[in-house]
Image 1 (tube, helix red, strand yellow):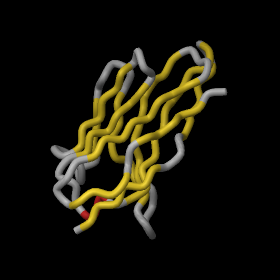
Image 2 (cartoon, rainbow, N blue to C red):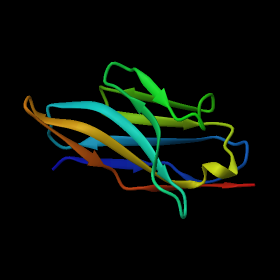
Image 3 (cartoon, rainbow, N blue to C red):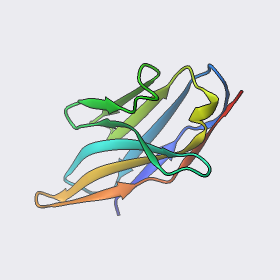
Image 4 (cartoon, rainbow, N blue to C red):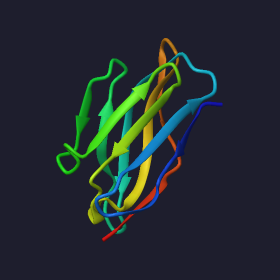
Length: 120
């Protein structure tokens, strides 16, 4: 069974740093685009950063210059390095990945959320 397991998160002071990781496990053909989302209380889920299999990245304007998304294809893992954290970054962070189970079958998978709380 394919699953995404998220680790990291926690409580950090404003201005601090945190690293999230999301590892894919199980049997699959290929791990394609991976995405970090977040959802703050009372708000809709928003895209934070994306990374394609070849390493092309894209960021939400609110995190540009502060967050870095990266991946290790050998470990089937995506990371989100968060620096200069602000109170407004407080949210539950989710990992999403498009996973090919075979050449012709690709599905989106979600990891469990992890709470990031930034104290002001």
